[in-house]
Length: 236
Length: 265
Image (tube, rainbow over all chains, first blue to last red; front, side):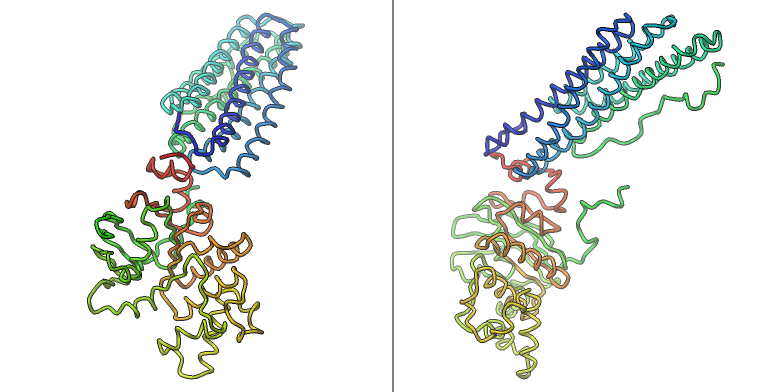
């Protein structure tokens, strides 16, 4: 990384908050993977675990806000140090939201375990979740390595997630039209899919933070939007 | 959204008040300032920062020819005030220093009354025709120096009897009594406590309405607080000059970054 500060305790503080952020990121990655897995395998116990673990994620976010506030008050960071601190705060709140979505997915798993199976939906969601988890992993790696190119790739990959969501949306509509008894599970699947799609947006925001951290500037808002479901009136 | 940036603290386009072009300063064989080019804007606070011995004070002293008093010092290049070269043979350094005032690190009031401290400059430059005009200048300067309320009842008391912070504000009031156009400040707060420092900083911000202020400071936080433009000097080079918000959030030169973030560099 960079050269060290003359005051070494400052380095230790910055390392500590970034280590905490990475720990939080690791927990959120697991929550995504486990949430999707519990959905596909109808594993209520694993779903319960994901819901429990979310408390830890929330606690870490609070701790990070406290620590970054202390660093700002005591060290008056400037330039890249300041950007490090500011991005830690923003990324931690993105991570917290992603964790909430994973928890919500786990909650719905408990309900879905008791109703009709919708062929392929859970597997597709797991694929989406897998994509998002890999994006998150790369975004966090990009953060640690201060790699804005990798961060840019992550931003572009969000398109794929959006497309998976669009496809699943159409499919769920078809299932619902075929048989009204599918409506309950399909609605749940749809909320889950939408939440995974939102996770992708939060990960994109994390990648944008990385670019800001490295370059001091935010990337252009020119990314093509692929979520077109707001314009779809029926499955046709 | 870019139009509303708080961070861009520069007051918009200001005229250039002083301009240095390719300035070199030598102390004997020591090349203290290397080819520095910079524009000082009017009605703007410009801060010079940098480690000890980087040349920031030397450069500041070039702006009102204080280096003339050092026999081994040699200044090359061009420095203009309102487009006129201040090193031109026909420029009287005394007149120049009335236009480009200076405040030093240690408060240095004359061993005279508070009144006479302020009245000294206007008297020798003949700025007042009679006693009542001089009284007005003294009151106005002390008010601008944000010290009037504290001293108005004891203008005959010696200036040296004031507290450190008051003495420094007295010196600032003295410097602005001759209606300078530019005010140079060399570490004006380094001998002051935090409250006095805040008072001087508030004063600097008010002075900006009428003057161009150039401040040398070792406190980077002070530079960040009071200035609109910041110049970073290192080993005699002007490394980076820019809008203060940009220098402190996103400096372009790695040496600036190392210095302001407190890294070895």
